[in-house]
Image (spheres, rainbow, N blue to C red):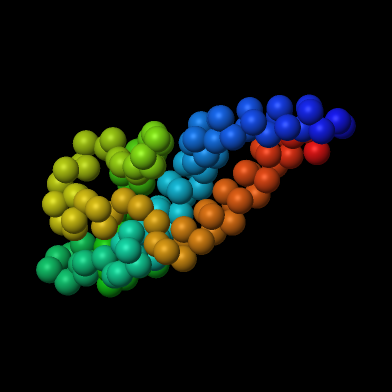
Length: 146
């Protein structure tokens, strides 16, 4: 590979850096959603704290025990799974937003601050950063034909 070709490829890569990063984030959207749902199933919110407890509803708490919830006594926002299944992510130049489309969304968001319901913990962000770094390296190698 000659130096001029490498220089030209590098210049092109630098010009498209923002769109390259956005495309990597878009590729990570399914991982972000799964990590978010996994946190909820453990009774954790997006900042790593505990979700509210079911203490004010003993009947529902008994039901969750019967179905084997792993988040008890904390809420996991899952019974039928439709709310979790409705999770989506949207990436733009500013970042990635996780949200739900299920009709119960507004009711459930009122039970806990919405920003604590959607997102990933610092620990899970570290996992995403590692995967993003691998994807970035692959894309750079491909663009530079290395």
